[in-house]
Length: 287
Image: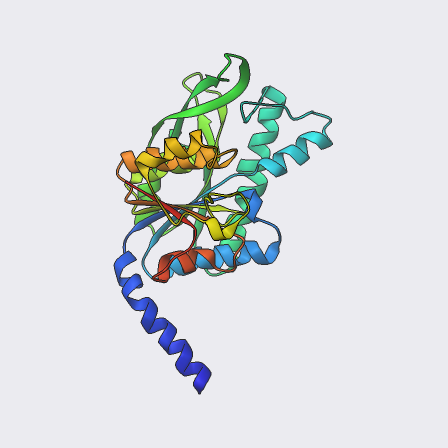
């Protein structure tokens, strides 16, 4: 009986947050760095299915860099990065489409269905949802079919929302030339959140958040204002793969997203901890 009472108390404590987030859109960027095992993946998708059942509108954007690297190496391709961007020639682009739009996307959709949810897997090419323009490296080098989001056609996602589906999106863009483009998943998530005017954008990572001292959870910055981001990048506090996440948070905030978060997705039920508890976890970047 005590255990049942405790469970009831937890539900009562969560009730104000369930009420607050009812009908709100939350974009979740799920990266390969948090997919360390089947249990971790299952925990994350359980959170997303629960969010849908209590009236929220989760949208999932996923990456898959490690899987792409493994697949290209098996084929004898050497992965090359310039300014943090994967050089994507035509053979590599075919692998990117197969891994992102096929393997990973279908895996996530299948597991959401197994957990009782209803999901639709799609890529940014579907319905020309993510329109992309070709980019070069900062030094001007041609890096192949690498794209930057130029426009988001939110109509596809709005139609899925009306039918109560959870969209699961692979970050592939469609260029005006008809080619598919490899789009940074962090950027894609930020652009989609901005187009949907999402209440919240959450990046799931394998670190506690943004820390003043790297790998020191005690130095976690729980709240950062948008105007402080550039200074933190200059100081090297925001560095490496955290830079595109922080910059995408800024883009989303400028487009009307209310709050953005970078949290440790390896924690069991990290999304529930962030959304349904008063203290939350990780780092929030606010206007």
